[in-house]
Every structure is written in C-alpha cells, then in structure tokens.
Length: 78
Image 1: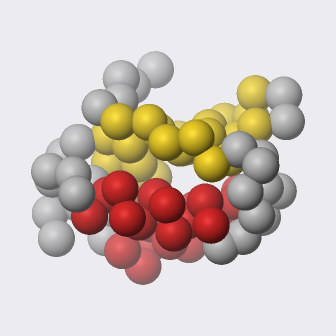
Image 2 (image 1 turned 180 degrees about the horizontal axis):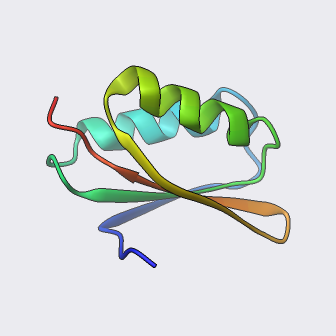
C-alpha cells in the first residue's frame, strides 16, 4: 500500500463535492505528493477516475472499505 501525504474526509458528501474537495486540495499540493480521499458517495467510483484523467493527476488506487471508498491520487506536474 502506498503512503499518502494528505487525507481528506468526504464521507457523507454527494456528487460533485468529493471531487471538488479533492481538486481544491490537490491544487495546494506539490507534484508527486499523494492525496487520500475517503468518500461514501457511490458515484465517486466513477467520478474520481474521470477527474484524474482530466486533471493530469494519477489515480493510484481505489479500494472499498465497508461503505467507504478510499482513493489514492498522485498530484501531477501541472
């Protein structure tokens, strides 16, 4: 499992808030740093990969832990 630098808890938030919170936090991070996002919105499993493909960030993993989805995203160079 990859270590992460920053974590945000988006549990209980509905689309598009988990992605918007991830985007805001990633903008403040340095390239190469890893963000862990905890989300419970079922749509996040579709939204996070799409967001990463559009933003230039890398989705390292998406795992389910009970009702929560855990995403690891590596900040891209942009």
